[in-house]
Image 1 (tube, rainbow, N blue to C red):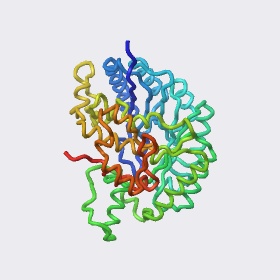
Image 2: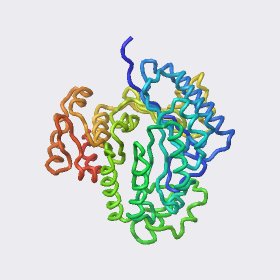
Image 3: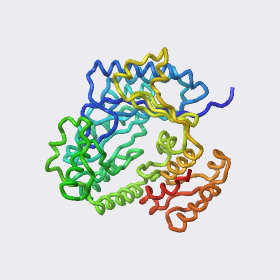
Length: 413
């Protein structure tokens, strides 16, 4: 039998104890019965899917949400048992679970470890408790410290911490304090994102309304078709968003502090100690096939993209012993050669090592310069791109204006 192809798994747990004010992910509160029904259905989906992927070996697994740690730990154990039963999982597979410090982690982490999970991603966002309240987080910094220590005591040697800058009212000094405190804990990986205000969220509704009242833009009416748990009114008097100069200051501070502390920036928003780069995310950015399980999860396999049903009631009614998988996945989009090339560039350039000209030839049978020669030359001349051996990578300035650079790689029809 030939060598198996690499595959990544993403498993979506849509439940959370309280939806954060900035969050636009597919997540919501649910009672214990609904959670149990969902987990039973999720297990069925995994077991039914496995036989279709016998030619693949799972290299990474990511259990995300939502808040996976809001479940009983035994439910996570049963989930992992289903994965191991249905798929061929590599012995050295990277297996991550996202956890929230406000979900009593001490008793759960050893059970995760025993189930085969070897990487924990802790959602902190800020070391300032007032900033955490502004975000609608359910935990304090002290809760995070307890959770981080519990993860170490449970034997986890690969821990990521999620941080967020440009929080309303946040100063550069406050952000510096958060970064310093996390560096002192010596996690293996740090994801440092800038707040994005998404439409339809309580933050989006509030700050869009504020912009309109201040005459800052004609964005139109705020969306009201999504429930916000009555939190929008509670944001009256909320601090303003960071201005562009403040946000840029925090951005450079992050890069400087983390690199001085030995964290390598390997992607626009991700930093790791050597050897601890997130293999799952690198797979996304380099075109490794991935299969998504659960409500709303996306997949990319054999050049095809498809997404799961997003309605909880419909998902629970699917019969996977019949045509449940077909109904679950809905329309399947077959990527065109043009789309594959564009995504190769968009995703690959997110990484600081850039895109490989050799891999482009291997995948598409044509020289990278034969497709993008003029664009590459222009971006190099403008100091936005640099060539290193057979790789093209964004410069520091190119990373700063990455959205513009990526748009240059759109191909004409």
